[in-house]
Image (cartoon, rainbow, N blue to C red; front, top):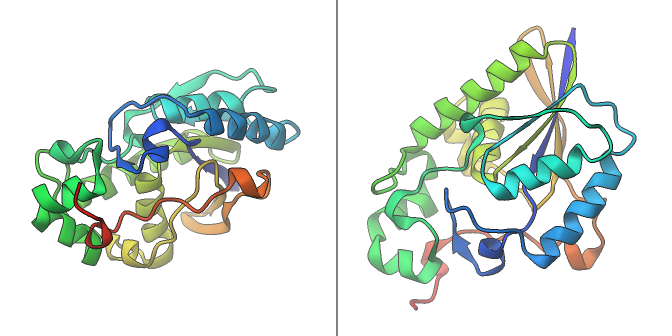
Length: 221
């Protein structure tokens, strides 16, 4: 029995637009993000979906609503799908973080799997939380087709699990774009990616490369 999970990173928020390290900060959707949502809804219009799940943060929940626009399913919010709790680094500009939190910034740049965010989560905690959420969803919706709207950091930890079987795989993980669509298949306990970060529903002007949070290259502010 195959379970299919469409995993979508949220649309562009004002924090993405401003180059901020958002974490749990609940920024609104940007004007460009609104356009992305309209096109995402059309992409999913004729795709059969049995259930829709979302992080409770606005940028993800609005993305789930777009996926669900032509389906009318209940959207099930799950805290386990939330973005990384980056604690004191939340919603700061990259340059600010590089100056105020050099140890955590260096860890995130060089060994993100070992990062502990000051006042927030460790990446071990994120890995366990996110993967437990996906395991719950797959178990509940076994054999069905599910859509999940979540965050870049959350998807990267899932990617690490599927590709390498451990959090260390996050060092090689792709960076997911706003409304990038990935497809995960589960069968007999085995997970495999069928599609990763597809943004073919967006024109070039709406599919700019995602921000890569490399604090070592950030200019002080």
